[in-house]
Image 1 (cartoon, rainbow, N blue to C red):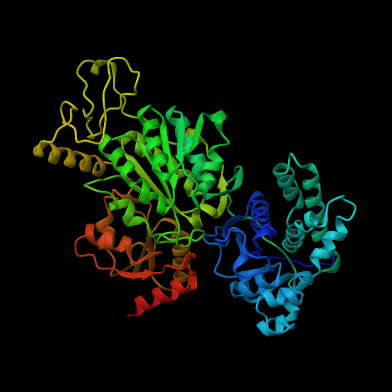
Image 2: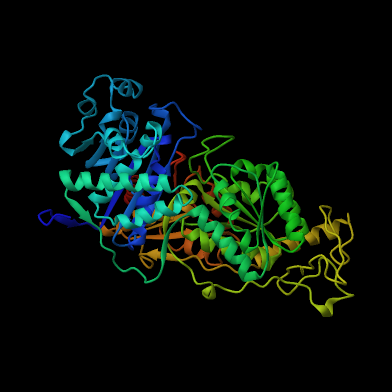
Length: 615
C-alpha cells in the first residue's frame, strides 16, 4: 500500500457481486466473506441466483448476485443496499443497480458492454450510464476480460478457461478497495483446487492482478477502506453457510449421543447442500442415501431410527407434502427423526431459489389425524448449528419426529461461526430400556415425562413390533377400541406439551416498549436491525423472536399481552399470527406480511412499524 494513499476506517460496508450465472459471482462473494470472517469481521451474506439452470448468456433473467455485509461490530443482515456494486456485464448493471445506494461505487467490465451486450440487456442507447442516471465519476470502468487474457497469456489455458477467471480479477480489485489480506484468498483457492494446481495458480495470479490494478491506478472512487474488528470473542472462526452449519450440528449431535448418523434424502433446491456436505463425512459415522423420491427419503430415515441411529431427512416445502404420511408414521410409532425443511417460494415449484416462511402451518397441521410433533426454526446461518443440535436432542430424548425449519435465505447465506466446543453442549440421553424392564416391558410403556422407552432391535429380551395401526396402550397389540384411541391421542399430545423449551426472550425496551415486534426463524436479523434503527431514533421498541414454535415457550401469552401494541412480521400471509391467535386468548396483533421471495428490507420495516406506533 503506497504511503500517500489515505486509508479510511468504516464501521461496516455492503458489497454486491453480480454477473451471469456462469461468471462465478457466488465463488467471488464466498471468498470475500471468508477473507473478512477470518480477520474477525462480522459478516452476513445473501446469495441471490436465478432458478434457470443456465439462462442465455447476457440475458436479464440469468443474472446471479451475491451480497455480503461486513462490519466492525455485529451485523444482522446482508444490508438493504450496497456501497459497492460489481457488475460483470450490461444485464447485471441493468438489473442490480436498484440494490446500490446513492453514491455507491460501481465496478464494471467494459469488455462486456458492447453493442450486443447492451441490446440483450434492453438498453436503448450506447450511453448506458446516462440512460440509468449513473454518475461516471462513481464508476471504476476496467477492461477486465482483456486484462485477464493478458495476465494468463503464457498459462497455456484456452480463451474460454481464461475468461472464467474474470471473477477473480473483480475480487482482487474489491480486496484492494477494502484493504483485505490476499494470502487468505490464496489459501482458499489452493484448498478448493487442491487437485487442480494449474487452476488454483491461474486464479491466484488473476486476483493479484486485480489488486495491483487498483493499487497502481488508485481507482478509488472512494478511498481505500479498512474495517477493524471490535468486541470479537477470541477463538477460531469460519465463514459458514446455514446448510453446512446444519450438517455440522447434526454430526455433533450424533457424536454427543454416541450414535451413527443417517440421512435419507432426495435432492431439492435449496436443501441439497446438506446431503452433499454430510456425504463427505463417512469417517465420522455418517451414512447418506440419495433415495428415489421424497417418500423413500423419510421412510428410510424411519427405518434407520427403528434400528437405533440418529435419523434425518431433508427437503423443502414440496417434499414436506410428500413426506407427510411417513412423518405421521413416525408420530404414531413414536420414533425419533429430524425433518429438515429448508423453505422456499411456493406454491408448487413456485420460486425454487428464493426464500419464504410459508411452510409453517403445513409442518404444524399438514398431516391427517391428530399428529403433534415439535417444530423449531433457526434464526441465522450460524444458529443452524445449534438449532440442528437441539432438534436432534429433542427428537432423541422425546421419541418423536421434530421439524427444523430454515429457509433459502438462512441456508444459502453465511456468517462467521466461532468453532464450537462440544464439551459446552448439553448431554443427549435417549430413554433406552433398562435390564430390569426385561420380561415386563411393552412398546408403549412410558417414563415420567410420558415418553415411551426405546428398545433398539437386537437387544435381547425386547423383541417388539411397531406400525401405522393404532396400538393398545398397555400391550402394544393392534387396537380399534375407541377409548384406547382417545387415550393414545391424548398421550401423544401430552408428550409434546411436556417438552421443556427456553422462555421467550424479549430484547430492546423490555419494560416500556410502545411496540413489540414478533417474528420467527430467519427474519431475526432484519427485525433486530429495524428495532435498533427505531430505538436510535428515540422510539420505545422491543423484539420477541420465536425459535421454538411447538411447544410454545411457557411465557408466550404473558409476553404477547404485556405491550400496548404488537406486530407480527413474517414472510407469508400471517401464519404465525394466526397460530398465536389460536394459542393466546384475546391476542389481536398488527401484521406485516410480504411474500416476495426476498429478505425483508429494513427501511420498509421501520416505516411500517412507525406507522403502527403513530396510529
